[in-house]
Every structure is written in C-alpha cells, then in structure tokens.
Image 1: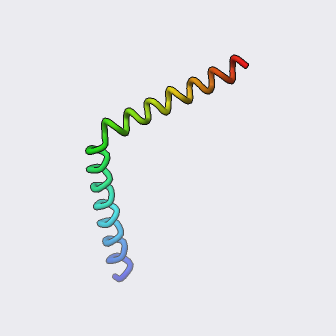
Image 2: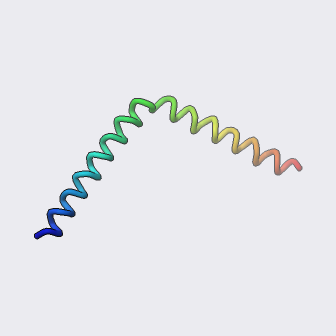
Image 3: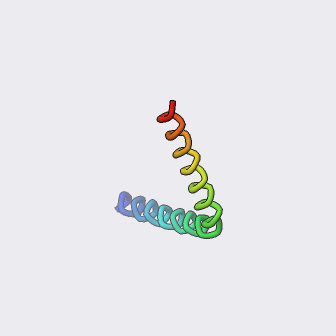
Length: 53
C-alpha cells in the first residue's frame, strides 16, 4: 500500500516536471533549435577541418 502511494507520487512528480520542461522548451523552442543548429554547423566545420589536415 505504501509502495503504491510512493510510486503514484513519483509518477505524478515526473509528469509535472515533464510538463514544465515542455513549457520551457516551447518558450525557448526557436532559440534552442537555432543554438543546436549552429552547434551542429560548428561540429561539421571541425570535422571537415580535421579531414583536411
């Protein structure tokens, strides 16, 4: 009985944190995507630089 209450509380906490993360991602969505894109581009440049050397 106690274990079930704990697991329910944990799953509720997990859902709430996931929702909060979702909201934060939605707010920062465009900037996060742009940062990821520029980071990806830089990574590609670094790899190309290594290949050229």
